[in-house]
Image 1 (cartoon, rainbow, N blue to C red):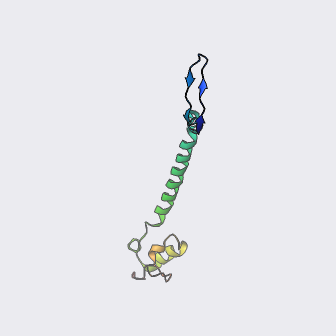
Image 2: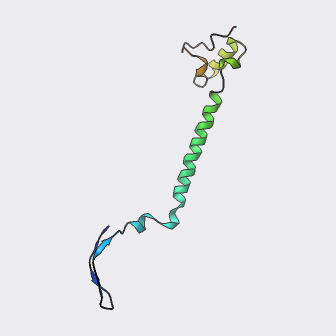
Length: 99
């Protein structure tokens, strides 16, 4: 960006000095549109991956199990994934179910 000084054309007319935005041509290049599109696709891919990983864990509740020992074995297999089975954080899953 800058101020262009006045100059004379070949036909002898004078062009008054004026402000010129020289960066606009460098920032917008018609050939360089693929970078933005690929960045958007990469972000959408990672959002999709993160959503599918969470859905497999949160689908189990205490009502899905017949007894407490069955719920406890699933809870022990992956405590981070099935943390919703242990409401009071005492490492005993579905305490309200019978053995």
